[in-house]
Amino acid sequence: MPVSRKGAHGLQKIVDIDRVVHEPARLLILSYLYVVESADFLFLLRQTNLTKGNLSSHLMKLEKAGYVNIDKKFVKKIPRTLLSLTKEGRKAFHEYSQRMKKIFKELPG
Image (cartoon, rainbow, N blue to C red; front, side, top):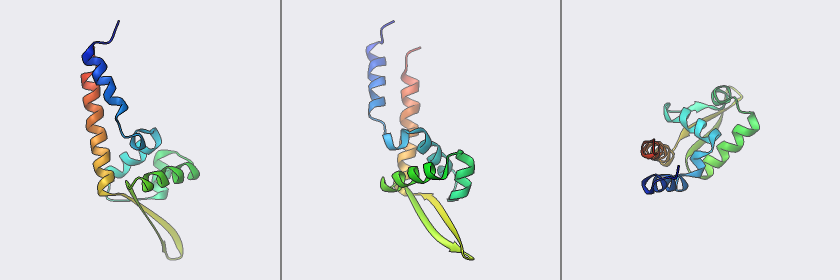
């Protein structure tokens, strides 16, 4: 069954989504950070089931995009990494969420 013009236009919107947010592991990280003020690295490690290296790599990409703040400090000589969304990160996640809802709503069938 061919896609209608309206359906094709809706699918074209997928091309314009934020690829930094869209990647599954980064979307998962942003989802957790969106609902909290901040979270530590170990919390995200447990919640996402990513490896330390994989989580670190995705966090660096999110930080480079300006979406995540990474605050490293020592608490009683123990390193602690706190993560939080920036204003831009919160906006990017919200816009991504709204855009995906709209795309799904406009799909035929």
